[in-house]
Image 1: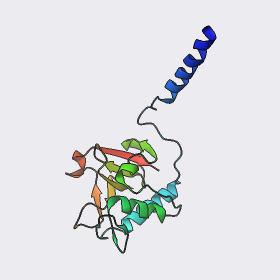
Image 2: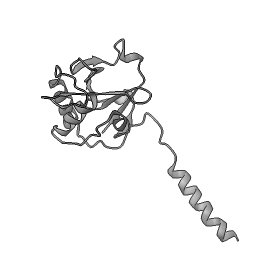
Image 3: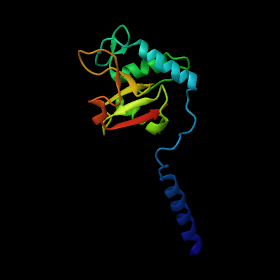
Image 4: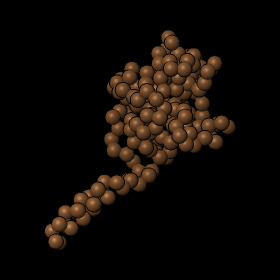
Length: 156
């Protein structure tokens, strides 16, 4: 009788341990990108400032939406990485990082349900493709609009 109970208790204990969440705000495991490659991502993103916005766009010639911009920049960097295509998928990509350890090339994901994203380029600034009729631009996290939005940071 005791042996029949031991196995289910052991399995329940192991499964419970797998379901725990690591503490927030800690340094994540190594990134796929070196510091140099992450800086290259930021420089490449800055070079696309002024490109027209286009819903579903993912090239400089055709224009960008926010996730298309991110995918393009990561795909064409010094260490190509395939990024997810939608903002909802980007919200779970890589490891969450605390604002205090942000580095260039990290993702900035806005909204409680991930509605917008950009690429952090340092000094509190990020590059993104904001909306219809606009262009890819450089904005500040502490700006009047963005400072009021829920935000998460991800490191691929």
